[in-house]
Image 1: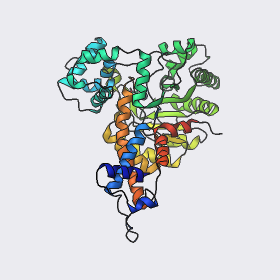
Image 2: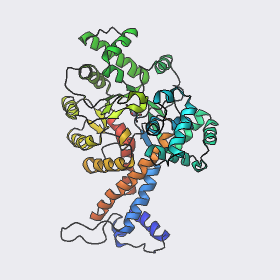
Image 3: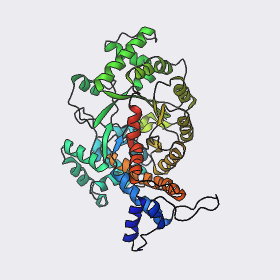
Length: 457
Ligand code: FIX
Ligand code: ZN
């Protein structure tokens, strides 16, 4: 298969060199001998080009399953989209506050368009938009065929505003080549809860994940709410209270048809422990997940409200103690854990843990690690330590159109990183077919995660 791509490429480049002896044996085969057991030569420049060309095609055409977002089924409500939402995304707001003179409290009282105007001015006009979040806006506009160079914000706004949401959702998913989107669904969100309770016609491209942060990080507050909703819970975690919390989780898992349960936790999360968080995980969440055959997704290492004045943009990062995760994976082999870590310093340890525990699935380059330099480093590390048994990326998109840039940027990096791995294989004579490459890429872009979510037979 490299051979076909190689041949086409060589013809196109006018070299006429289309009869590499290696092609006859198979496309990955080396054409020159190894040197007495010494390191084999790297894949030739021609072969490397062919590998890259094939990967570009395969990676671009493999639909992504986006396993964690903050996007919503259009009929559920709450879906953010359009130019202003793209600009006021908290990743950009955090960067704009570095330049803005205005205190954040005043900024947040302004209408959305004014906030967007200010961010546009600071990050796109007064300075060049070189950060990843800014680049993301430009990639997105570019993929819609818009020309951001004209720097005409009202015209860009008007372009988005003309589309009916349904059409725009479909087109955006198509451009991003995203087949399925996992939402973040919280029964603790009043607006969202009301719609679930009433019921609505589900869009099958949007699947649910049950988010339970308030339950695990603020038990007293959650207990009051559960009690208001008719669950017979007390303040302490007695056996009967735990049973009622399980009933709550079961009700919501069914109502949402949730595919996994999810929480983000701070760097000091410890397990086992006597804290409410650890007790609830051990006595309620894990038995619930086991009973219903659902993975528990853990996002580890977020320090909430490091600067509360910045609202959503004010969260930070800390290095987690992953011995807590090791205890979970070891102590609960019947449970499955899908995990991403926010700190760069935790990435290596997470991979090593995943080598020890097959009930641990590593996913995504979360938030502050979703920048090209770290996506590349982390993806190389994972491929080298875990092979293909992880999920490269989730978008974490809060605004619909962001799925375009998040996966465009990741796809570009994935081509580069995989090309290196397959070229190394080719240099040893290992032949990889196009079908095998397609299988591998599917696995990395969400296929492996979906299989991990299936309850064991
Ligand atoms: O906890 C999460 O799901 C985080 O992804 C968010 O809280 C965060 O604000 C975010 O959008 C990161 O990308
Ligand atoms: Zn998120």
